[in-house]
Length: 73
Image (tube, rainbow, N blue to C red):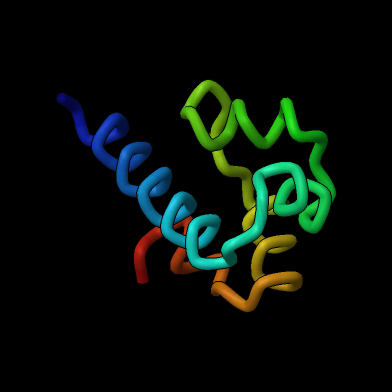
């Protein structure tokens, strides 16, 4: 596994942790961050990556730092 793949797995892990901590449905979470449920599913399963604007939306709506989501710092 290369470094990029490892980073993607770590980002997905943090995203899943945030999503699960909210205790809301994926549909409600996706709506709260301005995504369609199908688009959020693609991000959550790793088909699409977590973008900076999306991480910023999560920070704004759920309080988790976008820097932490994207880099772990």
